[in-house]
Amino acid sequence: MIPFNTLKPLHHELQDELLAAMTRVLHSGWYILGPEVEAFEAEFAAYHGGGYAVGVAQGTDAIELALRAFNIGPGDEVITVSHTALPTVNAIERSGARPVLVDVDPLTCTIDVAAAAAAITPRTRAIVPVHLYGQMARMNDLLALVERHALLLVEDCAQAHGARYAGRLAGTFGHAAAFSFYPTKNLGAIGDGGAVLVQDAAVAARLKSLRNYGQSATYVYAEKGINSRLDELQAALLRVKLRHLDAHNAQRRHIAGLYSAGLRGVTVPFVQPEAEHVYHLYVVRHPQRDRLLPLLQQQGVGTKIHYPTPVHLVQPYRESGYAAGPLPVTEQLVQEIVSLPLYIGLTTAEAQQVIAGVTAALAELAAAHA
Ligand SMILES: Cc1ncc(COP(=O)(O)O)c(C=O)c1O
Image (cartoon, rainbow, N blue to C red):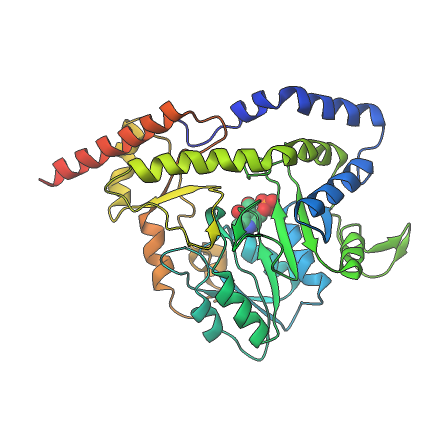
């Protein structure tokens, strides 16, 4: 069986560096918002060519606080997609703004820019594109739209650390960018973690206050904030992994390349010519996905679905009526997608085994039809 995902080979590869980082923090006597967090913030910003990174507790808070730092809240509308991890929408809701969910582009599975344009109202303040699966949204069109309507752009980069569009890194296009360091992300902690990347020093200072109960200095409260701090241990571990991010993304691209060259009978990921995909997930499509799944399991290919239910149809969100209108592409897509095994340490031989397993499962499916 090739598992859908495992972090064991990655953590085995980096074990000595990770243990050294853990020991350093243990012996430092300082565990929350300290020198490791500051160093990680500086290194993460430098990786992105500048700006300011602010470490927070997870990616969901990163989105919420990014919006709040730009004064987005009750009475405002924020456009995003329904085809995303639920926290994108949850975070917008928590900022006080109303999420407005639009359809995705059928090729990239990222925000349909024309649909976003059609959903703009006088209350619209921001767009949150999700760089889903490791590929950035159609940024040329999106930037033009955002500029035309003077909207705020907050990139959801939870699945796109190190991805590029026209040579430019994910997170450097928006007024703010939100990152998750959930352990399975391309840059993952060994626990929860997140960060907001901004270009403006005053916004960064406000984020630092918002993540720490709203304190501008010890026991001085500039506004109401929350507790969303990155801890020293996670920051120290993230510093280790950041040094390997580009090499690990290249490894992901190598495996994806093997899949895309070897797979027949499923639709492999479409990659925009401007995009450098970092394959957080390798997602294929098949019109009979639900019949294919048990056959893949029998062939020893671990799979998952990202995501089986679009947010506008998830039970507690259904009643909120966040969909801008019918979302036919999204609703069709979620019935066809399946994510194949992709993780650091997956060997070429294992990738070939996955290709053989998918090929055999498709043959069985065809035989069942005959
Ligand atoms: C696209 C997207 N946005 C937001 C999040 C939220 O991140 P976190 O789980 O760190 O809160 C995730 C990950 O779960 C995600 O995949």
